[in-house]
Image (cartoon, rainbow, N blue to C red; front, side):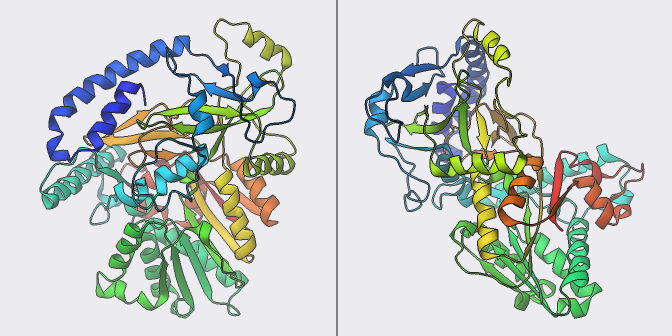
Length: 511
């Protein structure tokens, strides 16, 4: 959070029912402003310091005591947590799945902390907190004067949607987490564009020798699935007869929502024989699918857990970040000079796949690094770099269990309001119907979205290296101009929200 005061206030707020927390809301608002002032003062005096340790987790032989563990200092008077770091057990997100309470007096790698925060079955953000916005009737874009009018109408429908939720729940929920997808905003046109791409490529490659098998991960409400199946049924009945749609959904809540969507009307119930909803994590997949298939991952990469690294500015050696959680639920960062096998493999694969051409969070010139270290309060470690280790493991799953897949994915290549660092995430929560971005991923688990930009140049190279497949990266606008009927989403002024809304997104496809 912006300060320990704000972090404690959020924890206190989230522990109480919304109807009992109205008194806290004004206090929280003022403390957010105070917290930002404190953060500005801290930023002026922040530096990284070393702490002595006597127990080494996988450290190199002969490493000096003072270089074994590095504790990231984030406060004016940082608490030395060295003894707790030695004493607390190392846990993983997998091991925390059965826990109903947020862990304390433990330590874990950053990727496990993020995975636990987002996907823990009992308190994870996507398991318990998220509500997916639906605008009701599709927008009639051709009758809307211009994009500002579309934004105003979208805001009005957002308000109506949340007012209806408050009325149904008979209380005002100031911490309700609502997010939207392009599938919902541009229904059915977005889904129909995806359907055209799938159907065209299927007809040109494996038809009639194989069925059209589609896997979708992170399907939300299931709207994209329904739009795709509706389109194929209406346009190519012969292809529809051979279509199978399988959703892989980690969240039990969203899996139930997808089932209810499928059975909500007579029209959607007609697809029931085509659809299978598999309520499990893709990382638990253990069944080989030999048949050719398409794999959809729309806005999924951004919520994959990342590891965090910092680099010694003298040696350029990476140190891997670990999160320590104390008995009060407060967080501390430590960095170790020995990488775990997953992070180490990612660095090797990235270096080989890109031929060493990738960005780093420190000056590549030794002279520039020396000059930077001469500045007052200069840190002894680089800024953080967040590396997509979980995404690499997803590519491993595709290569091992879906050898004949063709991937279609869309995600953000840049995001505003990100925390400090290279490839750093946006961390935000929704409070009183407004988004509140914060400055660290170390936040109260389950109440904050943590989403990362995707460096498509590097990700494309890593995907090719692992799967051996050829790919193409397009801008979101380019893809939609190729496969959507863009006149359907054009306003009277000629502006087109489908093309302009997601200018910071790209599409990667297997060719």
